[in-house]
Each structure stands twice: as structure tokens, then as C-alpha cells.
Amino acid sequence: MGVLAAAKWQSMVDRHFVFLKRDFHMSVLATDDATNWETSVTYASNRVAVIVRYSVEFDRAEVELVQLLDGQVPKVPIFVHPDTPINRALLDLLLVVRAPSEAELLKELTGLANEEIQKALSFQASALQRYGRDFLDGDTSVFADFDRLIKAQVAKDPPVLKIHVPEGTPQDEIDTTVAQARKVDPRVPAEVEFYRRPPPVKKARKWPWQRRGGDTDA
Image (tube, rainbow, N blue to C red; front, side):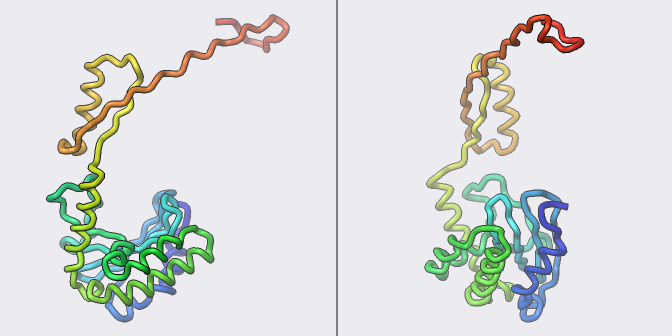
């Protein structure tokens, strides 16, 4: 169990997102509290899913919209390229597309205290009902907008694999490290950065009367 039990999180979320079951015939596909970084509950119909997440990493409650593939939640891509399918996006992006002023308000709803969580869940549940009903009905055409926005952002700040090695590392070791790292995605360039090893700590000499039993000088 992670930082928050899945059953407790689902109970909190259900109070705000009950409309997913009532109005859109969704059911709970999965819950997850296996890490200390987040706890989540996933609601799904035949074509789409909504993940509501208690995120320690980003210090907020967040909602993610998902286009299912063969009834399953697709993995998050490690890197995004022009031909990478986009089938997951945060509710934040839906608001950027359809209600920019609401997207700005959502940016302020951070924190994991109970009052902060309740406010964020209430806001996002309301926003999803107002601006995402077509998606909840199974229409995923909005993902064309998500694709355009996400890839435009990636084009402005292309991904790079940064590899940190200590100064003085032999070139063959550097080459091996880079080759292993690039197996993750050969299309992403790698940059090697060097750091200086800290100097060795010299052990202070102790006088005989300062030594504990069994202590010896190196």
C-alpha cells in the first residue's frame, strides 16, 4: 500500500465523480496504491476511461482522459515523436482547448490537504461534465487537438537523454553507457555531462587514549 489506500481514495473520488457511473455507464476498471508517488482510481466504459489521481509527485489531485486500446489503458510513452499516438491527456489540456480561463483556475488548485483535495475534485468533476460530455459518450475526436498541442510543445523543447559520468571516465566506458541508455529510444539524442568526483575523506589520526576498543589506524 502506498501513501493513501486505494479504498479511501475511491470513496473520496466517488462523491464527486458519481455521474460517471450514473450518466455514462462507467464502472471502476482498476485502483492502484502500489507506490508512494500516487494513488488512483480508473473509471471506464467500452471506449474511454477517466483516471482520477492523488499525486504526491505533482502535489495535486488530477484527472486524466484516456482513449482505450482494445479495452485497456495504454502505456504512457516515454518520449513523444511526430508519429507517436496520443491517447492520454490531462483534463488541464481539455480546458486549454475549450475553456482557457478555467484552465488558469485549475493551475491554482494544488495541495494534498483534505480541503484542497475536495476543492480540486469538485472543480474538475464540474469541468469534466461541462466540457467533456462528448468524450464521456465515447467521442474521442478531441484527441486530435491534444495531439497537436502536445507535439507542438515537444517541438519547442525536444527530448534529450542526459548522461552524467565522472571526470576521467575512459571513452570506451562512456560509449557503452551511451549505447545502453539509447536503447530506451534510439531516436532521442544523448548528451554526456561530466561531474567531478569528491576528494577522498582523510581519516583523522587518533591518539591511543582517543581510540575505542578495536580501533586501529589504516
